[in-house]
Image 1 (cartoon, rainbow, N blue to C red):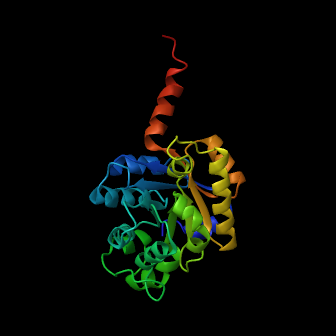
Image 2 (cartoon, rainbow, N blue to C red):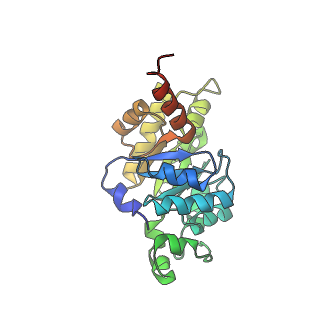
Length: 254
């Protein structure tokens, strides 16, 4: 693989990655060369199709960074497709029960751990392995994260976290805070949001899982890191452009 993500996360050092909502392999290649540890492609809310994502994964991998994909839904075909395209990790949204987490692992891992279907060779090329080497190592070097972003998921978090083969949990604090506030608003650092995240982090620790979350800025990243989260979305592509433009214009004398 372009980077052994499991080994990197096992160090305990925060892994901070950019988050792409726009399509384009050329842009993805440039994003991958920024000083973040990896790049996530958002296929749930982003404006990209599978053809876009496949080319973007190649560009990210060529830059020596791991490509992570947040798939549209917890669907076996979508999960397998992302991994076949060379994704190092998959994040699946709205996993609300142990059964849904088991289905996710089943679609992401080869036997005997799951039932991922063999096919396609982009993942072999990206991993720089022979087909046999990839098959032997895929369950270890590719990771799967279940998103925790609803009241139902939070209530079942210990059952979800105990599913064999699951590599981590990934909190979506925007949706989670909307759910916990009964639709009142988005607050990633409200007391009720942070209490929920503490519960997720504790479940990860008990089950030897990686704890991840969408942060979006430095202050929120620092808050989440202090609570045991190490796999963090640091910044969205459109925010990077906005911040960069503002930084340039603030010193211009008009």
